[in-house]
Length: 129
Length: 211
Image 1 (cartoon, one colour):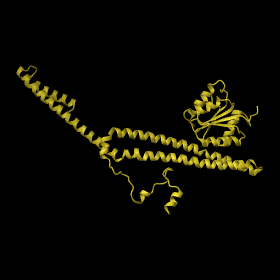
Image 2 (spheres, helix red, strand yellow; image 1 turned 180 degrees about the vertical axis):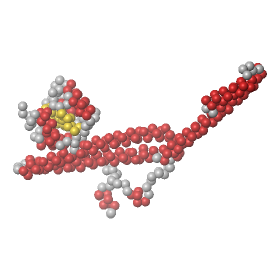
Image 3 (cartoon, rainbow over the protein chains, first blue to last red; image 1 turned 45 degrees about the vertical axis):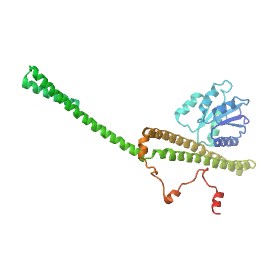
Image 4 (tube, each protein chain N blue to C red; image 1 turned 60 degrees about the vertical axis):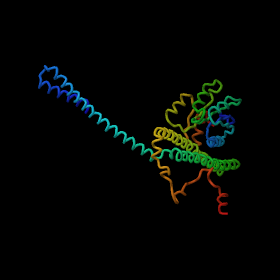
């Protein structure tokens, strides 16, 4: 099935600069419907709102709710549990990756990253576009 | 005299008694023997106390030296001046790199928008360049996180110095040089590097100084 480039994507990061970079990179990949949240709890509010999101791209290290906690909340929520979830983080220890995998992450990108890596991980999660 | 030495001394004394008087001793000799044994033990205990007192004196001198060392490091200055300054400077780095990064991103967004209205290899090239700029700007996020870790480490150091100064507060205060051990003088006092935004003079204020 072709990837719908009009789908909503939620990007979550406590650094405004990173949100801006992600938004621009996604725009270059053809995804214009991008919402932002500054931490896991704000993201959860957006996800539990009226819109449907085809992808969540989240940082890990945020307060008060981390990306891992957000991921667990998403996977525990009957309506949200199948939402593709990519973690984009500077946390690069293997135990972090294992914890994220155990929590049900769809893919994992280590910061700093480039546009090609972002695209390849999105393709592996969503399919080719 | 340590415990073993006392035991040996007593044993020698008892052997001597046995050799001189045999196993049967007259009752009036027993009291003499007891007085001699008590004197022997007392001497041993006094010797032992002297060793302990000497060790305690060495320990007290060591602690005094440590307090002098702590006082010479000026923990009050580290706590009240250097650590807060370091934290403020690091916060200023994060703020200024964020401002600069956003300016770069804004410029790249304009280029990207222009490239989107164009066609051909030139447009593709411009788009590639803006992608590279976006990627490079992610340094701000990483440096911000690294600086955050340094600030946390400084806070741990501050808390530990606080505990240290509380433990020795009244004693080391007397040993500290009130003038500040590292006060700069002359031209060196003018070398302060970039000022934090709230303390920095802007160009208009500098111009005003020239009348």
